[in-house]
Amino acid sequence: MGSQNFLWQLTKRTVTGALIGITISDRYVTVSSIRGSSMYPAFQTTPATFPGSLKGDLVLAERFCLEKYKFSLGDVIIFQGPDNHKRNLVKRLIALPGQWIQIPESSEMLKIPEGHCWVEGDNSACSLDSRSFGPCVY
Image (cartoon, rainbow, N blue to C red; front, side, top):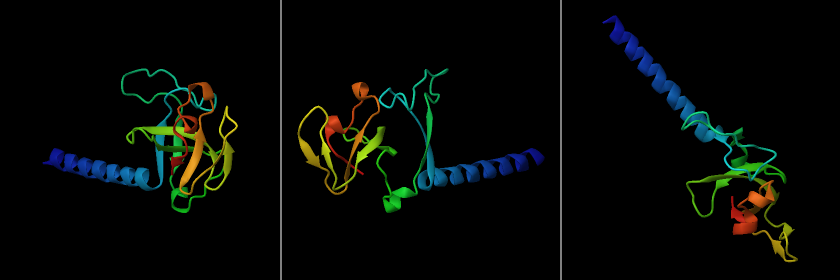
């Protein structure tokens, strides 16, 4: 009887902790690992020591600014990829809505539409970013 009570208490605490953790991750902060070299040298990828482990630098992303859109140029943001919404991308914010940007390696000027932003990786040689897919929705 004592071991059943212990298991019940352990299960309750585990479920409660998991629910609190999910709520915090969903509403306030989340941890994401950096994969790929598009943000090198700011963030680096390192090989995993065992399958399924987190690779590279870890980023603690806060979600408070999402409600008020208080983004600043130079911020590193995490967003869903335009071609695969299940894949998160980590890039640097280069231009906000209403701003003009000269498209890299071109003389063309582009005004960023409302609800969009221009993002680029720090390592331009290895980055899939707005230079490839244009302004992204935020």
